[in-house]
Structure formats: C-alpha cells, structure tokens
Amino acid sequence: MAHHAPDTPEAPSHLLPRSMLWRVAVLLVATAVLGAATLALWATGGLARADATPEKEPGDTVRTAMYTLTPHKAEFVSDDSGLTALQVRADLVSNDTEPLPVGSLDLVIDVGFPSGRIDASALSVKYVRHPDGLVFDIQPDMREEVLMTWSLRKAEGGDGQEQQGDSDNPLAGLGGEPDQGDPFDFDSLMEKPEDVAPLAEKEDEVTLTFSETEFSPGFTDQSKSWKSTDQVAAEMSLPLGQG
Image (cartoon, rainbow, N blue to C red; front, side, top):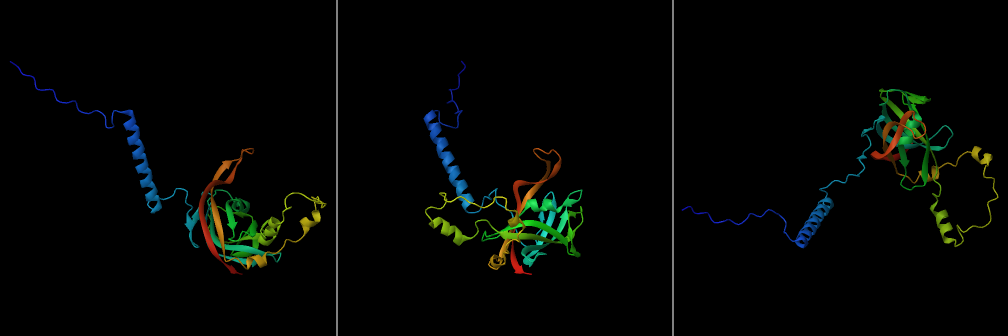
C-alpha cells in the first residue's frame, strides 16, 4: 500500500504581513528609518549637495561652452574718464567658431562686492600685448592675456544710513508731495557719474559668478546667439588691490 508523505506547511509567499494595517505600519517605519539615515549622512558630509556651486581659486580655470577663462588678479584702477573701475587680469580663450562679441561676456559674468554698495556696469576688454586699443570681438581658439575692466557705480539703495533714515520715518513710502522733477532729465544723463572711490576703499575682495552658457535661438528672434542658463558654472573670489 502506498503511503503519502505528510503535507508540508505551505511556504510563505509574502514578505510583508498579510494584514493591511501591519503592512502600512512596516512601510512607515522603513520610510522613517531611511529618511533619518539619509539626513545623518548629509549632515556628516557623506552626501554631496547637487546644487552646490563649484568654488574656484584665483588662477583656476573656468570652462563653459562659450569661453575658457583663467582669472589671476583683480584691482581697482582709474578708467579713461578718471573714475574708479574694476580690472581683472586673466587668460581668455573663445570656444566659439566665430568672433565672439565682448558684450556676450558681459552678459554671463556677474560681479559682486561683499558690501553690496557697488554695482558693475559695462565691460570693456583690452589685450595685454596691446593695452591702448579696445577689443570688440574675441577671435576663436586663440589664447590671449586680457584686461577685463568693468565701470562701477553706486548701487541703488546702497547707502545704509540713508535707508535707515527712511525706515525711521513713519511717513516714508506713504506718499507726500509729488515729485516736480522732469522724469526725462537729459541734463542729468549727461552728467559725469559719481566716483565710487570712497566705497572701493572699504572693499577687500570681489566675487565673480560665471553662468553656464548655451548657443540657442531667442523667444522672438529665432537667430541663435550665446545666452546664459540658470546654472552656475563656477564662483571665484579674488582679493582686491589698488592699481
């Protein structure tokens, strides 16, 4: 007579408990543990932040699709108008296949001072080998030692004492006597800008922020040109000297 082997218990087919309530509880506990572990790893530096801006030192090279730039030093100088300007000495290579307008560089490099009381304006470029002539277009694939000079102006609202005085006035910003001045004062436009020399004396460094670049069409003008993107390629702080 044939004998049947005793039935073995059915192997479990689920890793989680069959009860829906227990499943939810297990998943919540696992999620909490994973989140705590990730937070601890980030706090100890084991998890790099994806949005961290690459910080460069003077003499380091910054590469974007549009240009390759190696800033060496920064100093305050007097421009052709006798006003205080910022000058950065650097090695520059255009990565474009066509002459690159200097104005394109001005759009993708941001200049900032710690006090926030000075703004950079228009950029001009000269070659060290020919310092008397302005450069309007950078030739492609040619390494040049350049002097990049930004004109400077007092930042709007940069006078902290003036701002404090306005904030102490309870009627400030609530209106008052209308401004009788001509909104189109052409005489003021022709006046020589105020020199920022007194403010520049208090600055000891300048920070250059380099945007990533792309060669793409515009929204209205479909012809392609160099533009900055929302991403930052690098950031560099340079000590300031007096030229």
